[in-house]
Image 1 (spheres, rainbow, N blue to C red):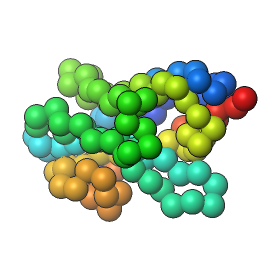
Image 2: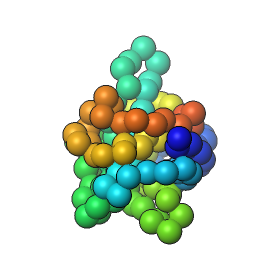
Image 3: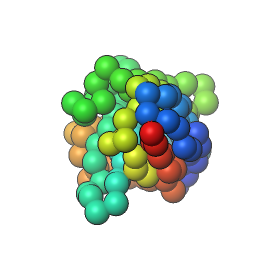
Image 4: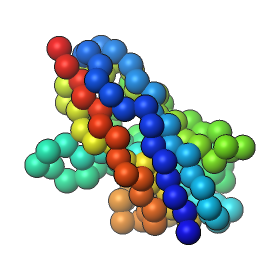
Amino acid sequence: QVQLVESGGGLVQAGGSLRLSCAASGRLFSHYGMGWFRQAPGKEREFVAAISWSDGSTYYTDSVKGRFTISRDSAKNTVYLQMNSLESEDTAVYYCAAAQILGRPTSRYDYDYWGQGTQVTVSS
């Protein structure tokens, strides 16, 4: 059983930055991965970024490339999402997810555990 605890969401002006954190507790497989998804009102949950614990490979959706950076702290079983140059379109509830075995990083159906979500609101 794995639990994910997210933090770092909040209100920020366009062009600003936030860093989200997600700490995982419990047992995960050796080749697990963690990622971030987001869901805006009236929209499906969409992939944002992911990272593999086996080789550190990272994956991003096109709309955040160059602005967001996903990273890990293996000792703390924690994943971070550094978000820079935030835009109003980034406003959403952001969810941390963990996969026992990371297959397709961009697919929400390949993840086994989910955090409670943290609200990110970008204003003008």
